Length: 360
Ligand SMILES: Nc1nc2c(c(=O)[nH]1)N[C@H]1C(S)=C(S)[C@@H](COP(=O)(O)O)O[C@H]1N2
Ligand SMILES: [Mo]
Image (cartoon, rainbow, N blue to C red; front, side, top):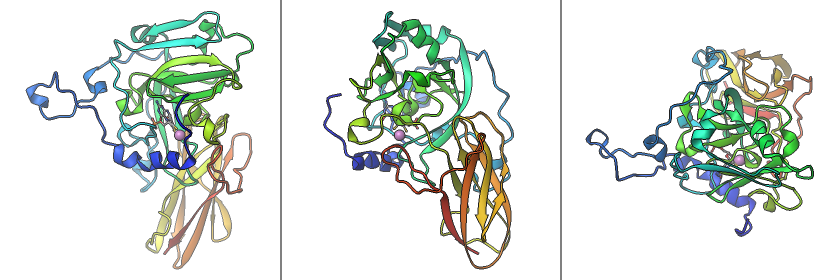
């Protein structure tokens, strides 16, 4: 990494930009037929890949409670609405026929694989929620998707890491890199993803391939447009965001978010509801509790997709006139209660209970 130090403000600047870069796309002058004239064609749209079948096909998408409960996040976030964090303005434009992934560094057997070779590897599906370390309590930088990809641990095993290596440092040719402990490949379903919610990876989300490591924040794991995996050591190499005080290790913290009602909003008296999402990698969500008028209520829960996918929750509420403070907290499948300690996102992710005020 050669670039100048980046401040914490820089990360927020980028995050502040996500709404404006949402429509960024690469315009290709060639191969535009009359039917698509004037249309913006992204590299990913130009290079259609047919997604291979997964060996473990998951159950079809379950019914989404968000269809019934207004204001609740959808169980799977639409690709078009998925949050986006990028150090650059433009997604890398990669022709999959030219894409290669190199596995280098402290390995006995350095490897290079092409996209065609990647597609031939056994594929699996994974329901997994990814989030940004800089997401504030109650913030929007999180989304859930059904990813399709091949196992990362198997691939790295084939490269035969040397015993004193301790870091998997993945990078793209956009200058981004992200490192996590080799020990995080502990049997969890880390993958090189090529599909997202039944479609090829959208260009903005890493076409043709990205890394997904369940239970880790994006900045230490989720490299989009990945082209290199270097097996190395934490004491010699660090990922893009680490020199500026972001922690070298980034396990995703247990959190819950109130989606509805909005903080500071006014709602009608009578039949009402409170709804949101909660996540607790790796064990998953066992319960969500909502504090309303001084007492904790047990929320109803949506489908449990995996230990690292979020779970929707909601409580019915007969709203009485006045100002109400509403708090949500999660409990994981190990029985641990989400910490109430309010902590800023720097250096390793925000904690604390999401609290809102609502007028009835
Ligand atoms: N190439 C590249 N990959 C990247 C990043 C980036 O800036 N460039 N940002 C990371 C961060 S900080 C996060 S939180 C996730 C966000 O993934 P998304 O944009 O698909 O939501 O991507 C990660 N992968
Ligand atoms: Mo992030």
